[in-house]
Image 1: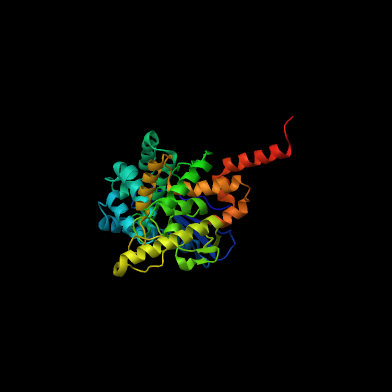
Image 2: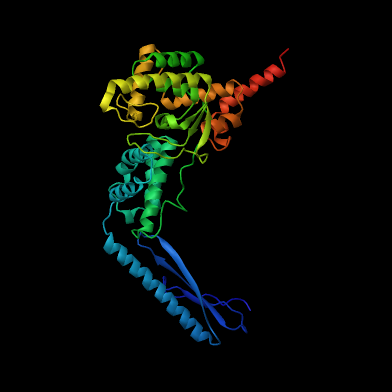
Length: 393
């Protein structure tokens, strides 16, 4: 026997229908109703009830369950309205950022704050959280598309979606309008040539860094000959170095000193040090011994390889500024400290190092990210190898 037709009634009243076969026992009834959520969206609620042998009693039980669901939805709307009647997006984002600040790395938190300040608050900051729906978000993304890069749009959408999801978990709204039907901006994987130092520029910077009387030149030289991340250089301790191997497991960065893990799941890893890197470390140890003598009782023994004149850890932003000054002084174009890492990786690949070896050393858990980031370099190297193997006529 086919299922019985749905009841037709007042819009929003819901439906109750028998879904079991004619002679089937117990008699099963399904109820369905669309309810309004606190943020204005619609949601379908449904359920099943049964009665041993009486269809009328089964349908009555289904109607009671339906009305109970409607009452709970109404109560939820009222509770949210009472608790957060006028919460604005600016307030929500501020509370969410305060919570995330306890678990994010300083530089990551800084990027979150920047994206929200520049690309979210000017458009959505004054809107009530409950008034933010698919139409509002779509209009916001269309406005961003006129002035912002694709990557910025993606990042801004991610931050708003995460904040709204947190609002759902707190009961401020009942669903996240940034999910599901909202068309999110697509990530674009651009193929581009990375900015790296040439071999000549790299040699000039290493030489200038070794002769620099300040504390940061040697750090730049070390980054160029090892490919370590900025935070890994800052976090390197003498106790991490065993013979010609460094064990990388800490990362400090930005304006807050904190020990953390590497960016990938590779975790603590063995980092083979070249003879050039070992020579730089010997020179740095001699420099630090001299600094320790000069500081006397003001010296703080922290164990870090690269320190201030009193033995304390260096600040990442100070290093970046000093690196820019060093580039200007010797007439080399200014690239970032992270570009020093890219320089090492690029030249290692061009000089014949395998993708697996380089990925393992620099802390990538596999070669996928390496291949995607350095696809132009790898393509050029493969073309060169083919040219050698199959010379032209």
